[in-house]
Image (tube, rainbow, N blue to C red; front, side, top):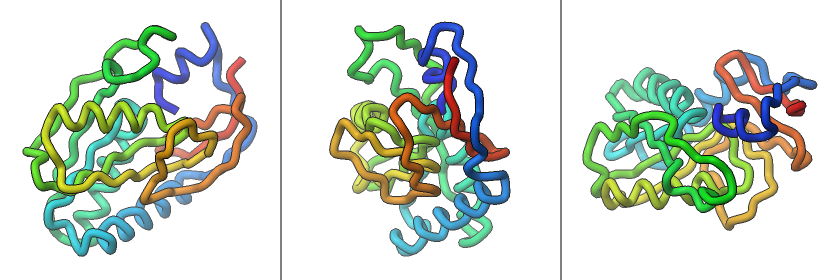
Length: 186
């Protein structure tokens, strides 16, 4: 879960993990598998670019990029995108930009793989698509997520998934390099 969601879930709430769903080795294997799937689907690195969504997807994008470079031997541009000001819930909760957007190369005619930690309602991805098009016109946009937990409110589906994890709406998912935890905020 992104830091912003963790802070906004419940005022002064604390995430309490109930179950470790994936350990560090599982996360590493999932990242490696997603890197292979990205290469296979796009027939190599060619025009592929990774963009991690702030804050949870940035580390994953860099990890996938490292694996892509190790597998293919080329270099893949990796950037970051803060979608806070493109969200459709700005009036419903406090939304503050988290970090600087960093798009290292021109997006025009590129295959952009958006990377995030958890896919839930789909609203962050919708905001990312809006934000992305202020930077250029990619040839294609694909979505890679470590955890797809369901409960979509928009017709958005990931292309590359580390783990499908059915959850209740009131549960929280925390993704980090040391693993994936399922729990509650209290």
